[in-house]
Amino acid sequence: MLGVWTPDQIRAAEQQLFARTPEPVVMRRAAHAVAVHTARVLTEVTDGVAGRRVALLVGAGNNGGDALWAGAFLRRRGVGVTAVLLAPEKAHAAGLAALRRAGGRAVPAEGASADTSGIGAEAADAVERADVVIDGIVGLSARGSLRPTAAELVRRVSVPVVAVDLPSGVDPVTGAVDGPVVQADLTVTFGGRKPCHVLGAGAVCSGEVEVVDIGLDDHLPAPELRVLRPAEIGADWPVPGPSDDKYSQGVVGVAAGSATYPGAAVLASGAAVQATAGMVRYAGPAADVVRSRWPEVVATGSVGDAGRVQAWAVGPGIGLGASGRDVLQHVLESGRPVCADADSITLLANDPTLWDARDPDVPLVLTPHAGEFARLTGQELGPDRVAAAREVAARFDAVVLLKGNTTIIAAPDGRVLVNDAQHAWLATAGSGDVLTGLIGALLASGVEPWLACGYAAHVHSLAADLAAHGETDDPTEPGAPIGASALLEAVPLAIRKIRRAALA
Image (cartoon, rainbow, N blue to C red):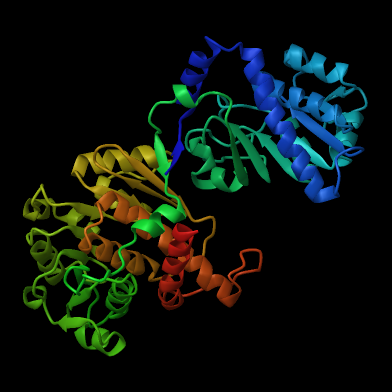
């Protein structure tokens, strides 16, 4: 897993590092990495380094110092470097001196010859003629969007941007954006990923993220968040072996849909089939429809007749009336792991006595979107989605998968996985039903619930991406919107892709 550390964790590790390595040495180490990666970007966009132009957007503090030192290193490679100082009186003194010694220039962002926007002519010229821009405006201590002068400079950028540590204007902890922000093509960060690199809009603004070792590894605590790698998901995804049969591979029960809305039943059951569950037992009023679409599913009319299962996926389309309540109560009383989605979550919110049906020693997964989260908790979902998911997981002693473009998966013990889709193809009716079936199949196969949710979320988003791009499997090609049926058909393709990654 990839680790993600909070700004406070990184700063504490830096203080330990500075006790044995002088801070200026560490800064130059970080800046050199920024320069190396900027040179790579220059080579990609201009086929060379010497004679090219780089503009530095420099704020106060150490982030600006990193940018200035990076400019000094680039200047020694023959790059024309101009630092645009947003706060000249607060610019990092040693970094600015190093840039000037190397032959670089520094100009104020605002000047006597400023245009109507307040940007000085030299600053405007530096940004508009640059081949690459380095964002060193603010660092990990900053909050809020870009101030007007910085926002105007960023608005004028039309070339690749390399961000130092994080894109300026992104909240370092939540990844939230509430105004003007830097859209980086590459973010060079130090020691480890920060929450803003994997959460929400911050993940999009970060572009490609390169983590540079500056000596923090020995001082970092356990990461605050984790991101699963495709190869490790592929290595652990349950597939049948020589000694397996349909029962050992996992038997999942699906309680979903209704006579009026059979689609949820078809999608959730189909996802469990596509996820390689050994057997899928469907129980509900859409049995005939499910059977006609998925003849391998053992379909019955009620949960009481379903037979033995190793886990349940329940909720999509079961309704909020007495019959839906009875289905959910039966499933919770079964003593089997349960993935409760959609109507199940609303039923639990509306009738707290349903919680009494659950054996507290049996795993429960809740998969709310923002609206269901509000019903379950009685409060709207705020910008700190990680804290919200953690709080609910602890309150209900359940694994909580908080849906969104960035999916948050919180365990009751505080562990958190993050899956950033980096696309919006899942914004379609029925996609959540597919996710429910995937999670149910993994629970039935014995995968630990927190990981089951992480595995399912990754395959779910990967399948959507593959479906949107068709046979090309090329993310650079424009995708097309998909429906949940196309998403479902792409699930085996996604599983094959992560399994190939595991074998590579």
